[in-house]
Image 1 (cartoon, rainbow, N blue to C red):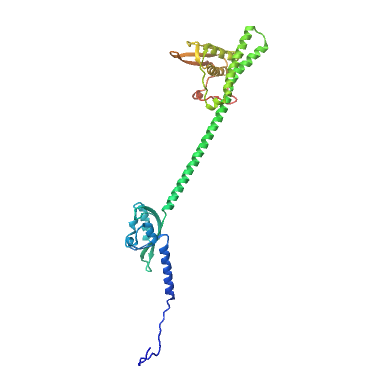
Image 2 (cartoon, one colour):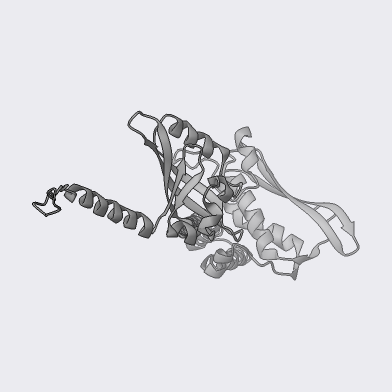
Length: 367
């Protein structure tokens, strides 16, 4: 201050405390740096969704320059592949002043697509009016790709596990079936062995009892030899496990005399039939006596049927028949039959006649 003569007589000073202002300014600068340097895209729009601010991460992600997006609507990023329901849900939340989060399929300036996870929050003024929207977005394209790859690997691994499990189950099923087949085969061959074996035992018993003319003894020895030869062929097949494993028998083709086969079957079963007072008849019809085929299999089949016929017939007769059905040159179609006066087969068992062999009645009380 100066007096009337212009002489300085004092100094008046006015001061204002700006500490708080400086602190606020520093906080704002810090927040600005955080927003600017954030690795997530940050986008601020006004209430009419015009872009007012984007950070560097937004520019790096989208490929746009700042002057190309300021003042424009964020829809410039739309690819058309984001479901409509996403935008409906977003505006429903924002319209109520609530934040929203979700995914967008967007398009960069160069046309390439990317996936963003966005959190959009409305900014309210003290009077409650929404003045801005802030969107914080993360490019999750790579995460989604890795997630899809992991899902694909997981599904592939699951498929491999299921496939391997199925293969193991199939292998176990085949193994169980093979074991059951072997057990059933060996168990069901018992009657194949008993028929010629009973003939051998019976005829041997008669020989041990003695008596009879030399011709009778020779005939009995011949029957024993025939039954023993047949039994040997059956046992050989049983012991040939390779045939069991393969599930098949290879047929033999050789010349044989039909009467010898039929007479042999009748002779093997003769003693058992005689013990039950049964008669065995043979009918060769018009079938040629000399044939070519597998005599062992034919004898085996006829013994099976005829043996069961004798076993399950209490009185009457058993007939062995050969019927000529068709002839074309040297090839013949012959039907072999075994008929008996026994109890027959129950109607409910008929459908199982041509299935793999099993006892019609497996109980210990069967007739």
